[in-house]
Length: 117
Image (tube, rainbow, N blue to C red; front, side):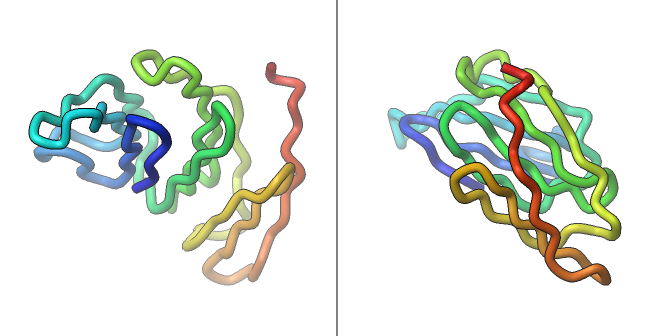
């Protein structure tokens, strides 16, 4: 899970109320009434989500790393992906780099391209 502003971003095989796989965006501005405002369901087994600027970076154990434009959390769009050499188990985003810890290939470092903007 990652929080940015008034939104919480969740990933996993079952992210909310057993509703399926993917990236789920919750409006948490009212903690007593959190509301699902967005979903993207094509991630198979999301493990980690990180938010930087208007982008969500998701490490998926089956399909690698995915990038979503979350400038409008109600309409997240998939803007890129990277197939890791082996299953990603951890990830962090710093500046223009994504660091992916993988099951058997160690640390992979990717430079983020802004050509999708």
